[in-house]
Amino acid sequence: MIGVVEAFSPTYSIARAKFLKACAAAGLTVDSHVHPLKGGEGEEIAMDVALDGAADAKQLLMVTSACHGVEGHCGSGVQVFSLYDDEWRDKARAAGVAVLYVHALNPHGFSHGRRVTNENVDLNRNFSDYTKPLPVNAAYAELHALLLPAAWPPTPDNQEAINAWIATHGVAAYQAAVTGGQYQFEDGLFFGGKAPTWSNQTFRKVLRTHAQSARGLAWIDLHTGLGPNGLGERIFAARDDKAAYARANAWWGTPEMPVTSIYDGSSTSAFLTGLMCGAIYDECPAADYTGIALEYGTQPIMEVTGALRADHWLYQHPEAPAELASSIRARMLEAFYTNADAWKGQIISQARQAMFQAVDGLTAAGSAR
Image (cartoon, rainbow, N blue to C red; front, side, top):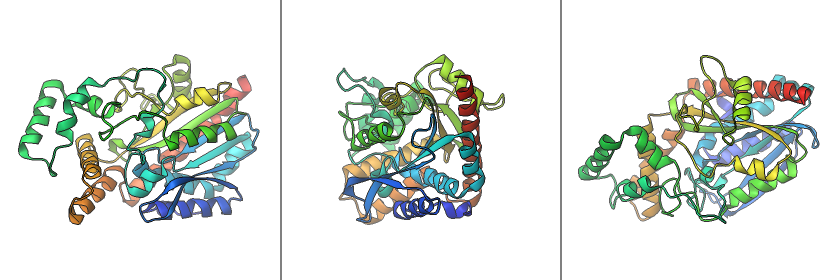
């Protein structure tokens, strides 16, 4: 076993080392997809993949981390703890459910402390059909120049202008405008990209290699940054499909805390475009797919968006003074990772419960299939 706190890491390089060590201890082979660029410490970075179970298993659970780079501190901790958790591994094996761990979907963002890829792309907005016209986020276009002013910290006039926009349209509309995804401003926030990123293409390769035998496919994608601190909201992560949503609620929902959805407005997340789950339908069309994003709260939404604004401003201004750059990076980390023992305990306990529930759900669905 490994301690809950010990499973988490302060940097990507330490997190990767812990994941690789945990895989070795579990007797698992790691397939490392090395990124073409180096990390923030000059280190090799990679999307590391380990399969715990039969390669041809008909029931497969994916547990993924760092879709949004800096959020990987949370997801990596869950993955490392799970690989040492004998009760969990026995549970999955006894049910005939293989578990696919994908460590650091976006290793560049994880290593550099950013939410986005090296292309400045939000990976969970990057799975659009680029052969067709891309969505236009008119509200974001109104805000772009205000969100990324010439100087940082923003002037009082800048903040007053944003406050005026929020007063007119509401906080929810502000969140939707900023976070929903946009494809017009390549240096902006929540940019979905003009083409599939390295992480997009590599994740598709992983699915083709490890998931095409599955007839029942579950996915828990680990995220942070929305909702009350330490609470893991279970957000439906699939197409707007009533049967799949009902299945997700049967597996993971309770009357007190049902699985939420961006499609009916019940989630703390805004409606999003270009979601990663689109790759499942493309690469694993024979699978009955059920998925959630397990979204853990850290700080209030306005602080999180403020940290993101600062991070993107720094991306635009690499000449910024070292002290300012350091404070912005520290603010980003705090916005997506609460470095407290109690928070880490909440993360592990809720993820572990969701993983056990996924195995039960896959088993029941497989019996009925």
